[in-house]
Length: 291
Image (cartoon, rainbow, N blue to C red; front, side):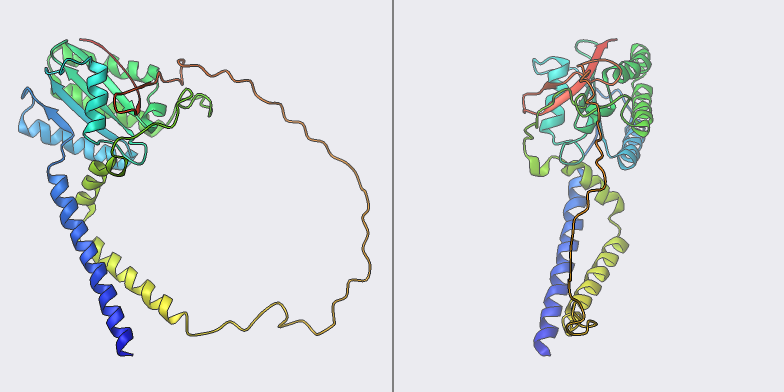
């Protein structure tokens, strides 16, 4: 009995330490995570906070990461390459495919570029990206960077709520997108989940988790005390079942024909997304223009 109690106490302690260490680690990491990078101080602290709040809400609702970068330092790269690399190497994204979008406001070239990754490539087709640019660019031309950011987030939420454009087939989902390589795959979605845990990681959540784990342990341990004695012979009288005869009778024949649809997928069109690979090896969609 004492040995069982000791095992129970050890298990409880391990669960508690795991939950608390997870809370401390994710809270500390989330404090340094920022989805709005304004290198030129175009946005006030209040505007930065409001944009980040909108992003956090959108990420939780639609399971897509959203990043906004305002800078004039392209590091010698094109807007497309800079946006893709910034997203990949700063480990943004949700899930194993690092789903999300990054809007780059390139002040050096007066250019905007929207980079998509993972499931966002499917949802945000070329046409939808063009629609977003049509709405965002006028605000950038007026140097209203706050409103441009808020409108961008609003459009992302709208299209994410609608889902992938129609028609969508397995053949044109990623336009023959191969399985991409993800740098640092084990931590690719860490930034998102750190924010989620920071928002949802109240003490009540962890207390409930611990209680649920303990209940499971108690049920599992008590469930081993009994032994099942009922089997397929329990309610059958000995020798009561005998197979006397068997035969096969041909009744009819049914043939079903299903036409094979033609493959009309393309790299563009209403549901298509142009896809390329970044320097990390990950696939991206996207589009941009001058402002």
